[in-house]
View 1 (cartoon, helix red, strand yellow):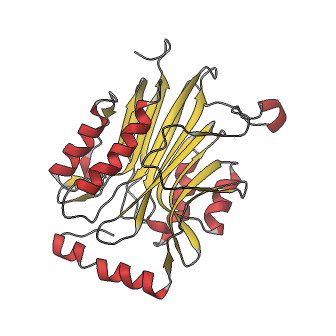
View 2: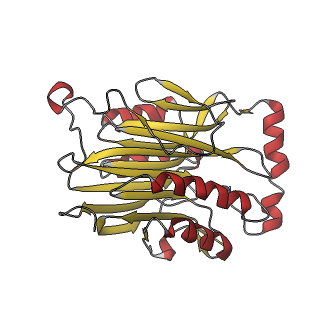
Length: 301
């Protein structure tokens, strides 16, 4: 949901409350992480952070020989970042099909886990994780990260909107890259939007920063950060400063903005930026962002 005035923005709160009261939206007590295998893992939200990410299986994905799939991303890989607006507008599936083939990693916000979305990702054998923010009409909605390879670690967190009271989720996944000796951390975040100040917004970013502080190696932080003010952008940049991340500056004319400020961002470190672009679409109030990276040949710089 996007607005051109703050008054309209905050009048959306009663509508969200009505959805909760009528039962269209429900918030699970524990944060659930869903996957393409049908697994649903419940994570307690009593801890303010999750710096020790849960390993997947034995800690190393099955080999290419046993699964027919690679067990690590290549030296060069492409990421697609997109807030897909829960697929509420027509044409979203066509847009996802058009761009998904380019993506070794697909990072989605406002992903709505319908059978259609599952089927589209399944066609190309994507492995995916979804951190449920809430359930809308009994369907999980949240942030999803899909990849051509299995993650070696997963972590998820959830933060509640101060005004709307609906949660936003964050998903951390790790993948082996190159020859498998290095691990890429991918952070997918849908940031708190409806707040009078930046306190809750900044606390969510501090949770993200805690996860980044434990990782040694390449990092991509991508998502819808709702940075519709200078104060929010400053808070985001400050939270990521200690992690030595670079922000990619996209052509603002190709990004959806609020108050003239872009909402979506991609940050990175220990990677070479090869190419990037935003792709205008009509199927969401956000445009997909396509970025190609290459590993530093000698490791972290």
